Length: 162
Length: 192
Image (cartoon, rainbow over the protein chains, first blue to last red):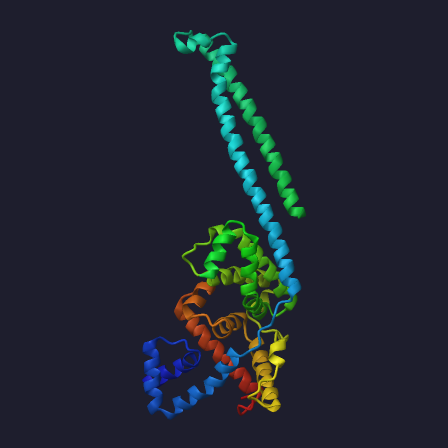
């Protein structure tokens, strides 16, 4: 491809002010000595100029208001969602705390609190305590999990209706 | 700078910041969407969806990035999804409908020009906008971003997620097609 052809490909972009400074310099130098390219560049200019002056269609004020109203609802929904998530984190942390705390309570209730301080309890009583404790914990977490799933399903349904 | 402050406020859930951003970008964003989908009703729906997406995603927005490019990228993705769903052929094929619309400001006469100059200028704009409406979506998009939004080539590359060289070749081809369309409509350059 000759220098002339290369420059010719850049003329439309020159009218669009989309050249690098090096390319601009190249084009400027070439069109000074090439009448054909100079005329071609002049033919591009009115197109670029008219494109820059096309009228801007305006959105209606109704559209802007409606968008704001929907966005406000979305922001509120997000704030609620964030709040629910924070509450959920606190509840889960509390549940863990209670689970851990219930371990000595179990021992206390079953009359084996002393064995905590003096870990010389029999193998059988240890297993019995832990099975009860694990069953209680599993039941609690299962109930919590079912409640969380049900809440999530309900929330999704509400979101779909909104 | 003001945009950055509004973005920070919006991230904290400030509705006034959103209102200011919508006011600032409403014309540019609506025009961009209208240039892509060409139907005012669809552009209006996409305009709303774009701002809802902004609210949804603003926390994941990287503050070191350009908000304009981010906003237009969201709008573009929604518009392209919409076109793929509604009229897949419209991503490549031109439609007969024109998106051209004149504003009140365009009708206000200027002291320096005669009514004839205005009539001719309005006619030229109609011709060029109708020719532009006949171009494929990718070409309409690059023309509106470069000439109407006055985005730099690098910014257009960000919005359209293509390399700078692709933006340049798209821009060149879109101008060539536009000129070809104008010359076919008005042989001998009578549109100028």
